[in-house]
Length: 115
Image (tube, rainbow, N blue to C red):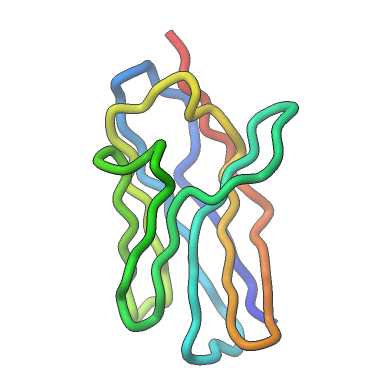
C-alpha cells in the first residue's frame, strides 16, 4: 500500500493561484501513474491531471493551459500548480496512485474559488 498526503488547498479569489502537493510513502511500484482528481458538491469525481513515472502528463480539457502537474522523483511527490482559477474549480481535490494491482487515494484537500 501507498500512503498519500495532500496539502496546499485553501480559498482563493477568481483568477488566483494555488499549488497542491501530494507526498507518497510506502512501497512504490514501477511503473506507476499519480494524479489529481476532484469532486465538486453533487457531482461525480473527475480526472484533473495525471503524470506517469516515466514523465508523460495528461490533463482534462477544462484545466489545460491553466494547470500544470509535475513531480519530484526523489521525494515521490506530485504537485499541481493551478493558475487562473475559476469558481467552477471549487472542489475537493484527491491525490491518486495507481500501479499494477494497487489503486490508492488520499483523503483530499478542499479548494474554494470565490469572490
